[in-house]
Image 1 (spheres, rainbow, N blue to C red):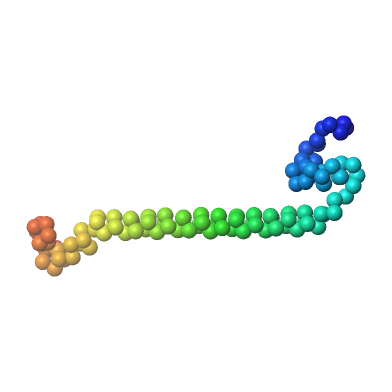
Image 2 (tube, rainbow, N blue to C red):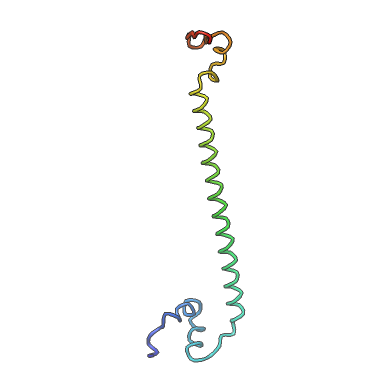
Length: 105
């Protein structure tokens, strides 16, 4: 292969350090192998932390939506339930709030 072309497998090394890429291309070894390995491990650790934070954020958003849905369902049930919304009808058959009268069963 010609020295004028950079192979796809060499791009990571070239992006990291042009001198390291040149040394590797001509058969030399970079003295920063352990530093590169430590940097790679640090980046992988940070990536896992970010992924866990994203999962936690999504779980919190889901719980918030479920809580709102539960509150809405409870409010709807209270609104639709005539006896719960107007407990005075259970006792006397009428509700002073709306002036409606109902016969006791």
